Length: 218
Image (cartoon, rainbow, N blue to C red):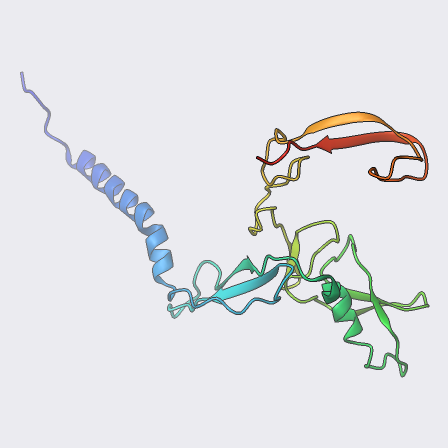
């Protein structure tokens, strides 16, 4: 009895085709990246504080189109702004105060939290009901919503986690810890009174109270 069978021409062809397909699959990512030049340096941050955006570009080396993006972004300047810096969106609105709108000057105030287009610069003329889109896009790094870290980049709202990374869905737990499990504080439920001692906060009416108690620092 023969210990092994001789491979038929058909079997050899199938085996060679499998090897070729595997090689092409393994190299597809490498070949795709090989059509691009190296990523360039990061640009200056769009903001000096409060969280901004920086970008890097790369050039397609192919005579045809390249697959993938030619620009990438990252967050930067993720430090709190001083109180006197003011709101970033408000600064962009006020920059139009010295530009006439329909022949008249206005003092422009920001319109925030637009559910339909949070990354357009909509401003309201102070003391009127006039709301105007003064720019199709706010500056990169502008918050999409006032109570969110998500930021506008190139006119699109991008998700930002509490770790200040683009595309991250990491959030703070009830204790204010980024990506925490809620174990660093405990919840105390009770009633608050309108008249409290000087060492406690004062409120205007009685009602339910949720307090997060933090352990003392070591």
